[in-house]
Image (cartoon, rainbow, N blue to C red; front, side, top):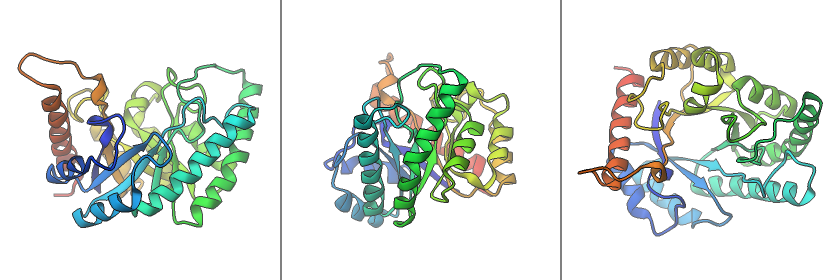
Length: 278
């Protein structure tokens, strides 16, 4: 199983001149790197892809669909912005040499609206209709999306793996499956391990995050249950740490940079020891 980390720990927006960060991640022992794609043409995908290949790093993208890129609303402008962005993300990951995109690919992340059941069903159908051709576009390029359930305080649309699986079934495209983020799951799932196991072979990507988004292993998440569930479904994909450096605060005797590096170093050690066969 590959152990990865998102560049969000160190920078809000990765750019081409941050090659030092890629090298740091490789030196820390990671064999997978994840770039959040905040903007179209955010960095030089061909150039960065060549560096990743030289360093032996696998790669994935986090789709960042804000309220101006939204498939859940009946708004052609925001719908088209999301479609354009998702197609660009497919082209970007292909140029980088990767095959996986995860995130709230339905859009509107940050908008909380709690729709009634009938309205939510219309939203599901709308999103499925929009994502079906995106899935075909991805499939033609060897790319697979993972629908990420997100905590209710960030989105009202898809909060659990069961809901993500329902949407994936409606889309009915092999290039659109589901992913898990254990931080969100810790709030939304009654049983994290059971939810993971229930996703079966539809689970294509995992954000292995602690309950406080610190270093995995430093909180109270049931990592033994997570490990058993992933083993039971034969998951062999990446475990990616997605912590946010912007949430850190200065501490006496410990700089923000030192805290970021410590999360990466300790998280890698824990995941390697916990999930890599001896």
